[in-house]
Length: 254
Length: 254
Image 1: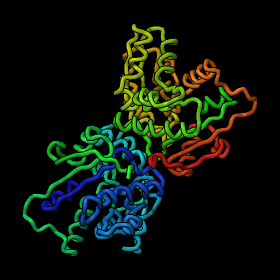
Image 2 (image 1 turned 90 degrees about the vertical axis):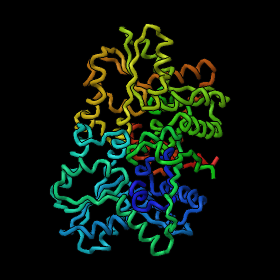
Image 3 (image 1 turned 135 degrees about the horizontal axis):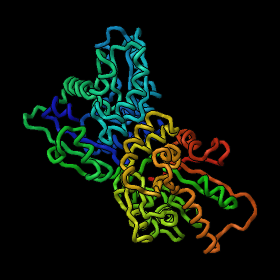
Image 4 (image 1 turned 180 degrees about the vertical axis):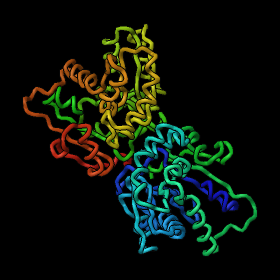
């Protein structure tokens, strides 16, 4: 959302955060798909011209089914981050950090290998990073973050990767801490890769907003607005007072 | 569930785990109450004679509303653990570990003070413990568990408590590690306290099952059965193959 707003300032953007049912990354593929379809149906009812699945987990597991049911283009995280990783790697050794569900699905791994058959890909599930980040442990010097990263990152030391895909929307918030463990490794951030893919897709389909006015931004959440604002500031990089209207909706009622 | 099965072996027990929407402890009071009412309605449709809200968060926030809507008695965690704590404390200094929502609600704190007006009560939110335990970090020697407990437990060292309420169903799984930080402090476990309260209530209302046969146990979950079995073994202390039938249901469809 943050990068989209910067790259496509004229576009109206509707954000949906299923805050009453996060995290998706610990759930089964069946449940993730059911939730993702409800999410997409809500957005389609708002009349959107394109859907972005900005969640690594939902992209990895549910995008085929969402595409099957959506009359508008659907862009997920998998293809853009795989493309970006293949473009930057020199030694064809790529690792992916993701939730349990994302890594188990192997979706990003398959896409990297499809684009670069020489690639050696290492998927690493990091289930503790999402709750850590949601509780604000993002500064590199925090002992708990160091301890958790030690547990995960030591598994990558000997693999000699030169490229690391941050396969979950949360992980860019700890990229500074990750970088300390893997000096010289290129981090691929889904935000930048996905926003560029959206720009390309809109342009190819001649769907860009050609008005020169500032786009409108609307935020919908499934838990209360108050429950959303703290964490939203962390992700959006500004107080939610400035981001636009935030409203609570219910997805599971229809 | 584990203690109930031991204390009341003749009772049929229906277990509902809202595995598609856990954890509750990070959500708003409004959402927790909505989910808890859906949970209770499902159990009432099964014809239960008593409902146990075994979740510290749902008990602390939603029990009044569930009781208002339930024709059968509802037993939560709050009153039993407060009663147990007041019975064991000698110096009237009690701490409560819970989720963010539980501690913010102050429900257990109020109940302890109601039963013991001299009590000094310290609530401590431990939001990282649930994801840690769900990912299997329960052994005291694990560095990540030590690191997270260091963050929380050092806040209790100077308070000189003699009693600590484990206000979340997950926390007894790390009681051994907690004990290392607080030698001599009595840990109050919701499982034992709640199961005893259930036994008393059934007995007072003459609702005990007087058949001498072994009770039947049914398990319902909202995510897939496969998603449930790993974590269930951790909590139930036995392979789920032996626990009885496990079925997936949908709560949010009515």
